Figure 1 (cartoon, rainbow over the protein chains, first blue to last red):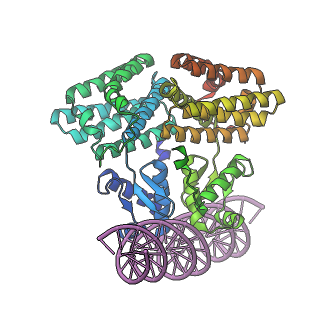
Figure 2: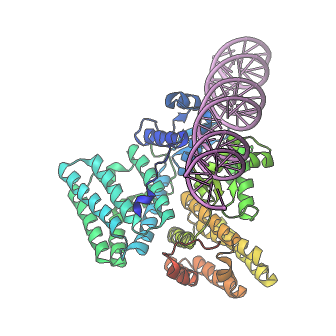
Length: 230
Length: 230
DNA sequence: CGATTATCTATTGTAGACAATAGTTCATAG
DNA sequence: CTATGAACTATTGTCTACAATAGATAATCG
């Protein structure tokens, strides 16, 4: 039954371009605020402008680029306010996921979270921060997927992606991920244990302290709305 | 300072097409599941296909249409599961808005909510259900705007829009809006009073019972994932 | 007479070219 | 020497045309 969902999609040039440009942005190959000249991208990707422009529209909706009429597109520039928005939204979405999904139904998705956590522990042992971040995102995504809520999953993925953009810009990475790696993983382990126990409130409480640290100093800087780097 | 935000934008054909098609869908001129033939739409709107296709990509991201590769776009078909997702997501976003915005800062936005509520009362007196729904949406949007959270506002608008699609299909309208109109408005009045009082928790509590009625029977039908109309 | 396959048509995917505009540079006047 | 204006260039916005594919129809074979 789950094999039915495997449908070999012909990758349209639009989807291809979306993936490629997204990767470029998140990998930092395209700098923050950098203009995305259509001609240059078409040449680079080997496609023509119509599919590229459709791809840009999608990325715009995803929040990775900003398009101003007659002035083209630029890679999104994130202010402190933006980071605040991303983090708060992420937490709200995770909360909903826990509330809906925590007396866990789909054992398969739970497996995903477990595997991601194992991967996190491996990364922490190896002190591989980059992979740890990725595994952490997989873990959280798996947690969110527990609810079986398509829109929630998509919204979360979009926010997660913007968070990756933050980290690519090193706005957020330092203060959040330069803590003790094993404590970091331990908190996630506890989270998963509570999820398995099936008590949503306990998970939510843990999630609250989980996120508190990263928010507290952010909250204070909110309101400035100033660009966070020059 | 707020006058600075007034920038007369030339409406690109893409934006024009997005608005036009969105209106057609929400007005029910395009039936649920109906195919959107590009040639027909270009002729109807008097534009060519590239801007139309960009518009379709945007609408796809917004969740109003579904596009399958090589098979074109269709107006989104909403299942019970979809309605459930929309409602739960909406509540989660409103909760976040209240948490962040309720010791209300921006008095201007608060005015918006007050005006919308006044409008609601007028509609309830006139028994104008259609306008009441619209005013209600303006009210909720104003409430969400209190937080001054751009991403939250956009996400909420998208969800709200899909909710309108539900109502256009009469999936949700009957059981939710065929209650007593004045009680409906009274609940919103209470909500706004609590917001003005500045106690987020009280607002959240009220919001919970506010939404509980509409969710309870939904929750039970979840899992069927069957199409909700034929 | 029913099922299967080949052709055909309607529709989407993509490309290249033209038109319009915003930013830039240079020249000129104060 | 600075500021203003005009021409220019780079880039976006849009259109028409071509290629490729999926669904439909009809014809043929069992």
